[in-house]
Amino acid sequence: RSKVATGVYRACEKRPVAIALIEEVISQIEREVRARGEAEVSSKVIGEMVMDRLMALDDVAYVRFASVYRSFTDVASFEAELAKLKNRSKPD
Image (cartoon, rainbow, N blue to C red; front, side, top):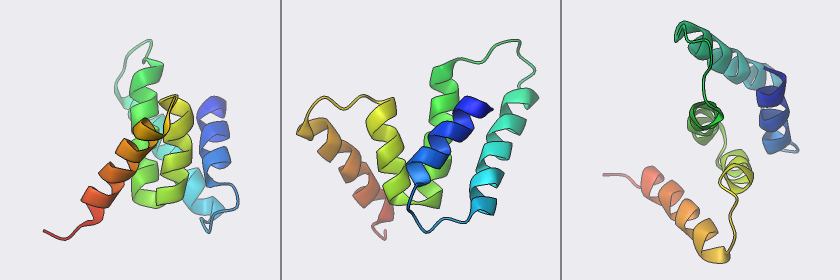
C-alpha cells in the first residue's frame, strides 16, 4: 500500500485532485489486490491498476505516473502515450 500511495501522491502532486479522491484510488487498488486472493500480485498488474485509475482521475497525473512506470526513453514513446489520451477523450 505504501508504495502505491507514494506513486499516486507523487503523480498527483500540485494537481487539483482532492486528497479524499487519492485515498479512494489507493483503497480501491488495495481492495482489488486483496480480492484476487493470491499470495503475490505482480508489480506489473498493480502498475496497470494505478494507471487505469489515474487516467480516469487526472490526465497529467496519469502521464507523470506512466512516464516513470513505463520508463519513457525518448520523446516518441512519450508522444505515443499522449496519443492514447487524446484518442480516449475524442467523442465517437
